[in-house]
Image 1 (cartoon, rainbow, N blue to C red):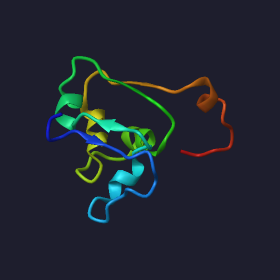
Image 2: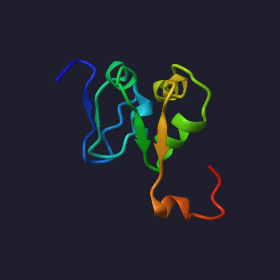
Image 3: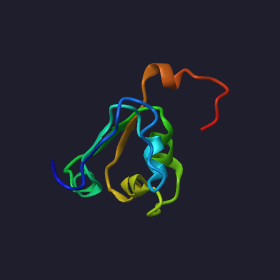
Image 4: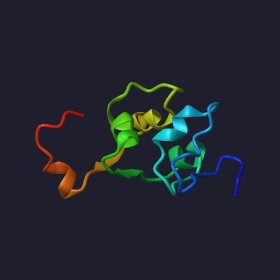
Length: 91
């Protein structure tokens, strides 16, 4: 693993106080680092969790590095049919 890789514990009690944004990562998540993510030839995001919503709607900021995907020329965002059918739930 490279130094930018992080593996989130399967239990919910692993959130270190000095890195509170790791609470947004789902249990069992593995990060690959933003350099790899933003350097990819193509980028496709999929999901319905908080990180997906932040990536799509929050202004680009270092507080949430995933927001920098908005600056890519060809991002593709997809959601599941279940997510698309949710009514009355504001993102």
